[in-house]
Amino acid sequence: MAVSDRTTLVDRAARLFSRNEPKITYQRLPPGKWMRVVGWRHLVALLAVAFSLFPIVWMVSASINPLDTLSGSQLIPDGATLDNYRDIIENPEASPFITWLWASWRIALIVGLVSVMLTAMAAYAFSRFRFTGRRIGLMSLLAVQVFPQFLAFVALFQMLRQMGEVFPAMGLDTHLGLMLVYLGGAIGVNTFLIKGFMDSVPTSLDESARVDGASPSTIFWRIIMPLIRPALAVIFIIQFVTIFGEFVLARTLLNSVENLTYAVGLQTFTLADFASKWGQLAAGAMIGAIPIVVTFLIFQRAIVSGLTQGAVKG
Image 1 (cartoon, rainbow, N blue to C red):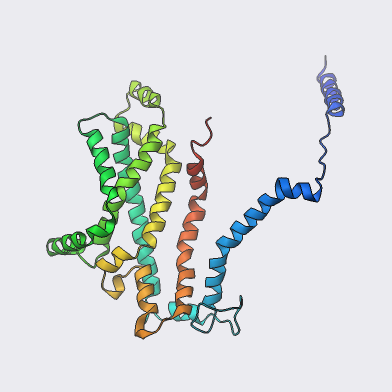
Image 2 (cartoon, rainbow, N blue to C red):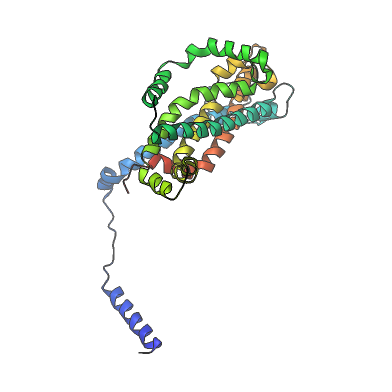
């Protein structure tokens, strides 16, 4: 049979089957039934979106309000202006806002990355190795998280003060000292979270890699880490957002104006001169949200994958 004849037979068969295929028709539901079956879900979704966007709209309105008030009754206030944004950005002598924003972003990024790597290594040891003190170590990490962090303020302050006498770069009023404090408080809970994801990875992958001559470090970097990458992205973004907006520890351990973080600097500037600059506070909050939004957009695919990982057994 020639090639053209085969092609003709295939085309005829395709047309024959296409004629017999049932056509899918969609029937409109009556308005009342549609509301009971589908409509209420749309209503709940719209209410949730409105509830989430209301604070943002309010802050945007306050940031363009020429009056220093947060109680405006209009969505677009009379005489809307961008002077609050200009006062923050274009006046570095009175408000080194960009310096504070850069410091917070840098600290949050470094702490997030280092915390993820350290906790991944610790979780790998607790998940895959069997050694003396393993159970006690896990219980100790859990017990440390029970006590509130406020109880350690005095101890942390004294530790950094004494450390600064030997290593000035790690003492009080330094970003490195603040990052060390953040890392110490994040390893415990993150280790438990990452360990749970590592336990879901089959150990047969480790055994197959050992048969091929892979070392524990090779298994960790080449097999385990790629598989738990979505979980690491979720841990990183949670850590990043927490550190970026942290206020209490930064307010206690930092003093110099040029070393302040975004949250502390904005609070100090807006409450200076015995006057509350609510318009500039709102403008600074809107600008400060940009790094977090950008970080979410970069990691959004990994975040969604990590949050849904394990929800459906495949």
